[in-house]
Length: 83
Image (cartoon, rainbow, N blue to C red; front, side, top):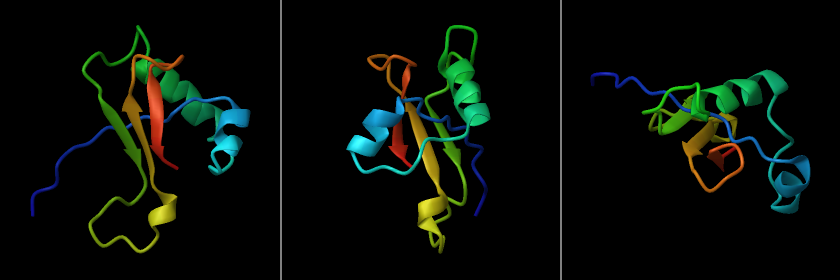
C-alpha cells in the first residue's frame, strides 16, 4: 500500500472546555503554537487536518493519536477531533 502524506494540526482550546467534555489534559504548548500557526493567517492555507501519532488501520495504541481539523468557527481556526 502506498503511503499518503498527511498533515494534521492540534486543537487549541482552553483547559476548562477540554476537561468539561472529559478530554485528556491539554496538548503541549509547542504543539498548540504549531497548530495556531498552521491554521492561522500566516500558516498553510490549504491545510485541513493535522494527525499526530500512529493512525494506521490496526494501530494498537489508539489513544495516542491526535487529530485536528480546520474549523473557522473556532477561536484558533481548528478543532480537536481526537485526543
